[in-house]
Length: 106
Image (cartoon, rainbow, N blue to C red):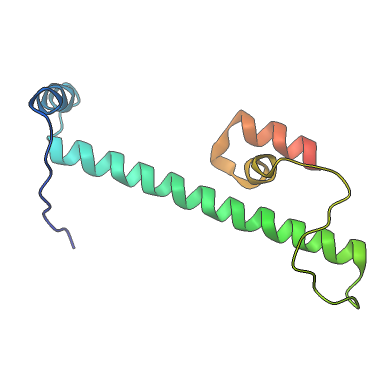
């Protein structure tokens, strides 16, 4: 179901958006809808990759300390790894960052 919204833009931005939309044979509404859909999809993919990376850390922690120990309130890892590397390793839409990160964590 589609719903209408009201959007306030500066005159100059609206003029540029109309020119851009026309050059792509789209309306401004269609252009904004497509860009918002793309932005939301990218954010959802990032969040899914983040959840997968956190699960990977949890599994690594469990195998390192054993399941018989109580669950700590922090994560123990044998080496420092930037969290972005773990996220990019799971994010298939990250292009070359995914390839490099996957090689680092494999």
